[in-house]
Length: 238
Image 1: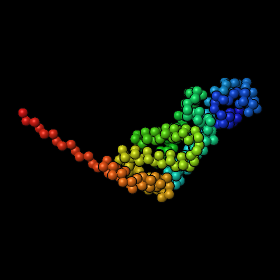
Image 2 (image 1 turned 180 degrees about the vertical axis):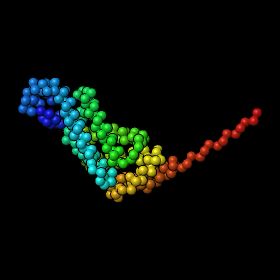
Image 3 (image 1 turned 135 degrees about the vertical axis):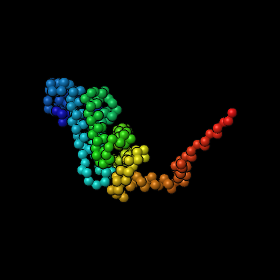
Image 4 (image 1 turned 45 degrees about the horizontal axis):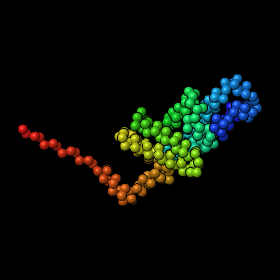
């Protein structure tokens, strides 16, 4: 019954699925749905729990090769999963009535926490690193928003979204390192194993290309120049 419900919720919004359709798809009856789950909402919550477990498993990636490439593979699996479960995922991200339950919120929170933990594991950056944690949490929220936009029409190739979101994470890490001297030192170790054709190298080349735009180069140099200390105020003698 759970498998049948997962397939229906994958294909259709919660509001469009009846208990009768779920029961018939599972070869059972409405009474069985009420008996085991208390109704459609209870069944939906159980399906959410199973789906959340599947999503957490998507984050499992061997610690082999450059971190950006590992994270890119995770990102690709995440996008493929959301595309396969498009209707249900759109309803989830848009916050429909069915998703506004304690159970659903707990599942969403667990997926976010698991994603955050796995990102830190793959980055190999130790310590609390509050600036980095805030950056990663902000990136996770941005991924959800970008997924919602992508799933709305699916006109952009998955691989393009995958690369962009992976590079967005790297950019967030670099910005955090600019605010944390110890993290900046560790960032060198992170970059040292990146390949010339990987996501990080592609991003670096894109950013370096901005230096070839005269207007950008000029203004970056202006903004990067040290700010002179204010002149001492003359003392007034009465």
